[in-house]
Length: 256
Image (cartoon, rainbow, N blue to C red; front, side):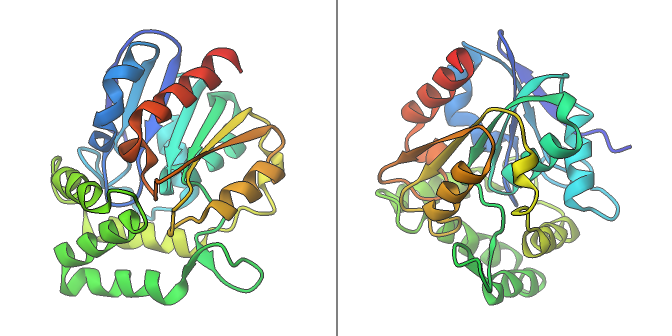
């Protein structure tokens, strides 16, 4: 069993925060203070990211299990990007651990292929994987730029992401490659109807990584979901519009 690093802060109902690929729990810093006034936060570093050790043979299932083991039963879970993949997998595989879901920049399938036009081209993700060994920092910076593209204040967002990228050390290369493999392989479209937990989808209207159409698809195919589209925001709406992000979560978790 891999015990993940978890920062716990605040008082109130339990809320776990699960970050995306190549980042760490510190990426939530801009919303932690406000959320901690309303919730008991459990801020997770995913395997091989931040202060958490890597997993051997990492998969979406093992990632979801590792997170489920370190959060309280019946917590609300907020996952961003890859973390949203993990949150959905957790709700399916460990439903007793998850009371509600907040899915940020979520999609059932990252890859644009065949009958799914709402994603990233295979060549783009495969290039990131190949380039990591040749130019580790440059590749991560290009991914950050992709996340910010389309945002109202893209330059400021890129600077924020870059400033936080290595705050907790450098993500393990093999973990990053395994994470890209998860993004390439995962397709939850046939399973999401089995997610029974009430779900809030928060999506940037200008997201080019997981387009808003992916969020709309989820809102229609999850059993009990609503969507909040944030104008002017790209792939990291909690950084671009923290006030609306916090108020959306607070209203959803407080009033249902």
